[in-house]
Image (cartoon, rainbow, N blue to C red; front, side):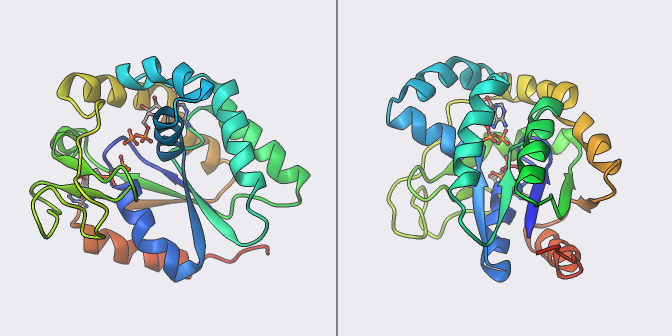
Length: 218
Ligand code: ADP
Ligand code: ADP
């Protein structure tokens, strides 16, 4: 099963991906996590991406498409969830082209809908584990021990782009460049809207209901 996860920044995509992948035997491919890894390793891609990420702009399509195609190509078998990619119509077209060439398709697009006025509180309260990528929230999903990852990875950190100013730019970027993807995929008839305003467990349940009903071509 190939799943595309859409939703504004802070909607809960990463949180839900970590909760659903095991149940369906899927791999979680997060473009944001891959970019942060590239930055940590100080690669050429990481250096090129830095200024865009820190200001809440999108990294150029050519860099992202090359990065994600490499990642998708290394999935020999089994399905995956794309979290944070595609984020522009151009990226979606490139993904479609590559999948068609491989005799595959996107089986379902999960569109996690959250009201804009909830996003800033979610993002500014987010604390992330730099090692395993798990996201916590100071109020809504606190770790068992303050500022420590539950999986024993060590201290949690706040992402440099999780500030009020950058969040506003990221939400604007989402509405301008990413939300048109909902209509793009609606034309393919595979979008499922999920209410992301609810509690984490309720959202997970709604996602299970959708994914349990997906018929895959594979
Ligand atoms: P995204 O990957 O879409 O940017 P995350 O999964 O990292 O979003 O979630 C953003 C923040 O909101 C995190 O701190 C997370 O713990 C919290 N969060 C996620 N889902 C919910 C929810 N349903 N209700 C409240 N807080 C949530
Ligand atoms: P969010 O919590 O906003 O969903 P991500 O971790 O997915 O954040 O992305 C962080 C940043 O990485 C984005 O603001 C953007 O600069 C860059 N990025 C991630 N995925 C993409 C993509 N598909 N296209 C362009 N830029 C991307």
